[in-house]
Image 1 (cartoon, rainbow, N blue to C red):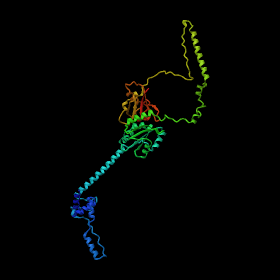
Image 2: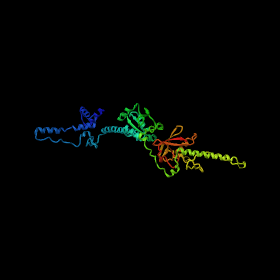
Image 3: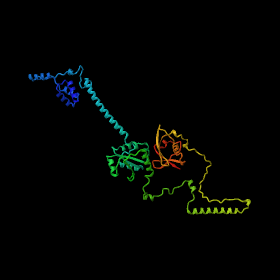
Image 4: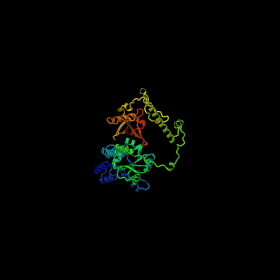
Length: 444
């Protein structure tokens, strides 16, 4: 390689001394173009120098002439080409130098493409495994205080950059739509990376022994209630775990005890005037004496009925009347019991639903999880515009052949209260906000 550069330098510059050529190449770090430019920049016109020296010896008062500069350089290596502007972008290199420059250009292009490809790969990796949007932005104490104020559990995850399962948790678990739907109403997710101040602060309070480290913290007491460590948790497993946790734990279990002032506070409902209709119904004060009088009156009425029936039994056989013994009845003032006059069988709304119209992979869909009475769970993809009756139709289809004939579909709202899903065609999943939720089938 160095010998080829040396021969090219000698042929281009016309230099006959290999040692001098080697010196120029070493000074230019074996860059042929730079070495050639360095060589030509150090050349001088001998005749001018000689003339100037002679003139100085003749007369010191006459300054040396300006060195003459030529516009064309060294015809010996131009090969009938115009080399004006050597080193510029318009410079016409000879064929052997063009090949060398093409080789250098290809190397630079390859380096640029490699660097660009590595940068793009790094950007794609960061985008694919980025932290989800539901992660709480703030310190551990801020997340704990927010969870306590909102009545939610605090999920903490400590990640380590060189553990790939930590990145998988971001992409496949926390980024899952169904996991986010189950997590958002009941939990706050907070993450910290190993080596950061927040991770060190958390490890000073809790024992972190492997990664990814995930735990559920009670925001009221700071107690570590549940822990997963050292393994990847896929989305279905996380959904089941969170649902089971919500079913078996509640932040309302330990309410604060009432203060003494609350215990002895006056009843706000005392001395309240009832409406006129209510006063008419309850116009008799309820006390023990009134209750005794009513019992005596009831017993007297029963005794009179029995005596009357006994007298009627003494009548002749042709004039016999059978009087049934009256049964004592308690009456409620102004309470009217209405008997249904007629009952019409109403077909459930879910039987009017064509389920195949809503279970599709195309369109604006959402994923919901349904838990059946036998403990099995199933995730289905359904249109957001599907009526609520479609959920009942789907559950009825799945329960065919089972002894369960009557059931209701329930879900947990943001206050952790169980609510029923209406079996109706008038409301859709989107209207009721049942997107990406977990439903339960309860036998009636």
